[in-house]
Image (cartoon, one colour):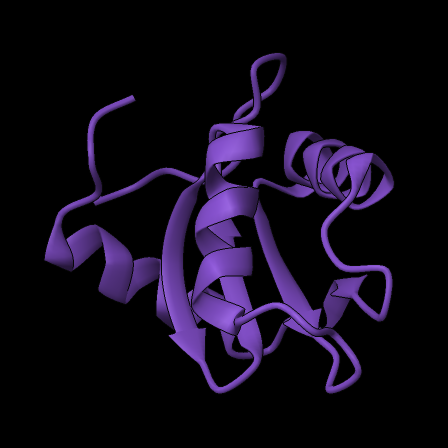
Length: 98
């Protein structure tokens, strides 16, 4: 998948403002269960917000890059401990990028 342009990231960030974080990385850190949850959420929704909880011992930036690599998603935004990921659905794409 090609890297997202600035215009596309801006569009996705605007769409992500109203989303709730549906994936959480907690004390157990990054594991297969978290990757599976994010992968399933990305397939269903394409744009997913995740949260790194304060009891997570790993750095937020490291968790963000590991999640993006593990799921094949693009990291759209990192604000504090909140992450926004985008990956078009393989079966039924819903979001049309500019």
